Amino acid sequence: MYLLVPPIISPHPKEYIIAVDKPITLPCEADGLPPPDIMWHKDGHAVMESVRQRILSSGALQIAFAQPGDAGQYTCMAANVAG
Image (tube, rainbow, N blue to C red; front, side):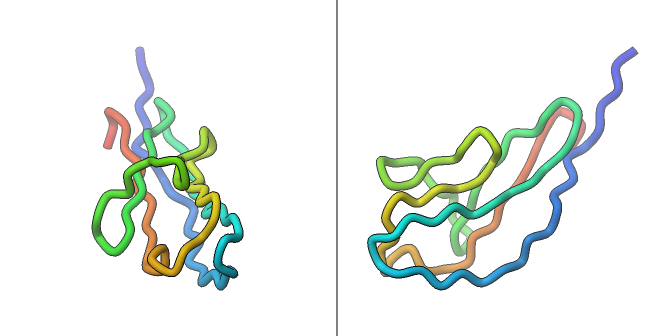
């Protein structure tokens, strides 16, 4: 017997103010069975990982050195086979 649990995200609505060229990490705490895959969106568009932006194993989004174009609304989404 397998137990499948849809992901649940702990809410972290927060506004961040960061200086240009400084690093920032946006948390995304999600639980579920199996552990969910985390995807990030900025202003409704999927965030693509790059040299500056990467999704950590914790699910957090790390921006190595913030730029003015990084400003916006970020949303993390979690998904697994249960939901």
